[in-house]
Every structure is written in structure tokens, then in C-alpha cells.
Length: 170
Image (tube, rainbow, N blue to C red; front, side, top):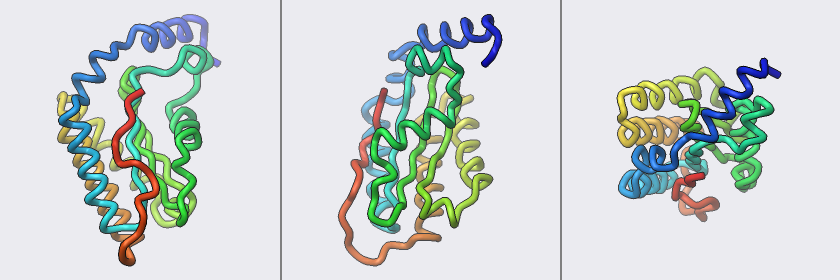
């Protein structure tokens, strides 16, 4: 647990984070482009990719110092990203209030792709986000994820799309 000053500042940052800012960063055209990129990539590999963009943490999570990673893991579970036939779900989680990104991969994928590789994908996004390039940076990261999944888990013919491709805005 952090100091009370830290708790108040962090909680305030999340409480005052603007939904409008998240919608400007990820307008409908960007969300459609991301969904199309996820769909196209999933045709080349056995993975299931989800993107969740969260304006801010819920009050209690901000107050009790839930980390970005902890929140990503909770959303991974809450949205059933772990529940795929080949244990091949991947979550790209964007926390707008803290300008942080985390990637959670299911155990089938985690055995083949290490944390350092996922961090490189996160850096693609954070570098682009710093310059306001949310659309391009997110599409570049989705392309990187798709390439990694194609390399390690190539498609073996037609298969059902187990998870929706549309990004989730919280």
C-alpha cells in the first residue's frame, strides 16, 4: 500500500479521467480498424486476440493500488479470454488514466512467447501513444501480436472464431 497522498492522487486521477479522451483516442473508425486487423490476423493463426481499453480503474481498484497487471489479469478472466479450445487467448489491455499497457497471454501461448517479447509490443503502443498516434500504434501492436501468433501457432485450416474481435471500451 502506498502513502495516503499517493492513494488520493491516484484515485483522483482515475476519478477525473475523461471518457471523452478515451473516445477521441479510440473513435469508432479506429475500433472498426482494430476489429478488422484482429479478424484478419486470426485467420492466419490459432490465437484469439482481445483489446480492452479502460478509461480508468474502478474506484476501489485505484484506492487499493491494484496494479495494471492485476487489472489486466482480472479482465482476462472476467471476459473469458482464457476460455479457448487451445488455451490461446491474448489480451491487450490499455489503461488510459495511467497511460499503461499490459498483455496477458493464456498458458498455451505463454509457454512459447516470453514476457520480454510482450513488453516490446507494449513499447510499440506507448511510444505511439506519447505522440497521440493511438490508431497507428494500436494497429502496429495488433500486427506484431498476429505475427507472433502466426509464427508460433499457425492456422491449421478453418476454425471457429471463439471470441469477439471488436475492442471493448470500459
